[in-house]
Image (cartoon, rainbow, N blue to C red; front, top):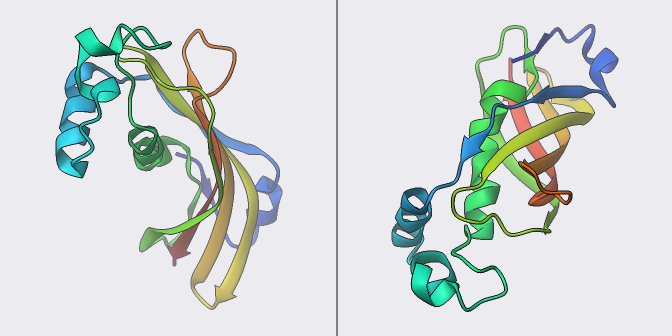
Length: 151
């Protein structure tokens, strides 16, 4: 996890702040997500039926892949000196490009697009985030993610 101060934050704009470790998206994780969200569509939870789809197997929910950004941020998001907390502020853009098949590994890549102090002690960060799938040419998703940091 990279660290910065309010004085040098501009040095990080346009630069990659981190690439996370790989995380396996296995069927158990997909099934648990289906239960929590009550989205039990067969392409997520029925391996036999999913064999007949163009994917050939079950795939993770797009929102499961998106939710992994929180996990990736632990390794990749820039932390300001004196950080008290940071919270999810939303997205300017999200595109789910390639489904993540059960058993595949994904990782997050973060680039800081902007950092603006909204009021004293409150900073709005915008990241270009890409979730890569190991061995795949196209990413699982790309997003412009906003987070608010309090110092």
